[in-house]
Length: 216
Image 1: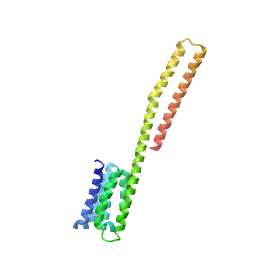
Image 2: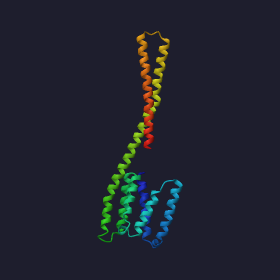
Image 3: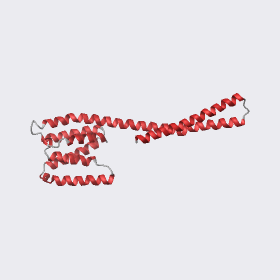
Image 4: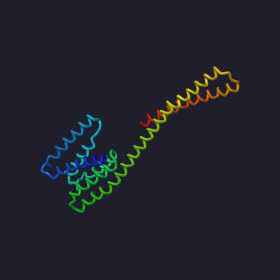
């Protein structure tokens, strides 16, 4: 249900633009576009991010007030769909596309206007697929980042602490117990290997941390 909400909001923005285009207020379209652009810039300045809903309204208003399917700038609808697909779940893109198709079909008045309508029908599955691939890649990146975090935590806490305990225990045993030369040699080897493992783990932690920073 939450995924339907963005599609409804996008659809509502386009519906407002369509209703405006079929009223006498359509003569004030340039003024409304200017006002919408100002609101968009204010949101961008305040939140440091653009409002996709504002863009949806602006693009829809331009399309509907310039002829709908017969608009010379109809191609803007393709850019809008792909932008929505990159920022939202596939179901949102699909729902918004269906709403656009229904609204734009109201301007179907000739066989020539069938072409842009059919193109929109074909571009919708493509936008849906691209959006799904993009979101899947984002999820995969999040899982990789989570695995890297877990590895770093294990290296910096569990593994490091265990190795340090082994080194301390071996050092205490070598200094207090009466050991034969072979036993001391074995303990010395254990101590040496433990320190080598500790250094390797610290180096690996730095490399993972640096590679993560480079990706960011």
